[in-house]
Image (tube, rainbow, N blue to C red; front, side):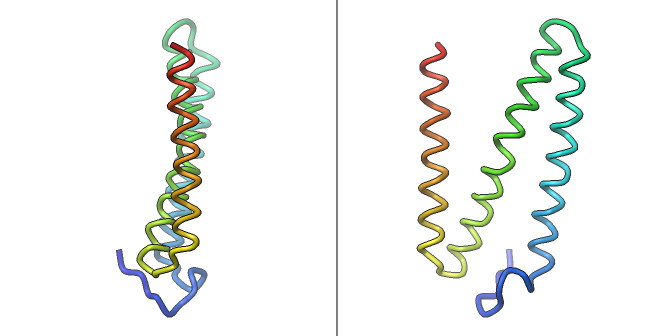
Length: 102
């Protein structure tokens, strides 16, 4: 990934366009999975609903990770550190949810 350190993110349409495209497809996939989850009976419907929920949670986390990598490449360690701290909190919360739910 080519990151220009001397230009702000707003002037880098390729990187921002890729992120916007990823979020667009994640939104469409989450909507489709959610609709299928509400229409399909039984286990397949529950599986689609959980997949939709997972995608809704994962898409922003992937975006934060993507931005963290860009911040590390630009040597903006304050923002990168905050992004990694946020991802750590989300990861620990997910791990605790899995452990508590059995």
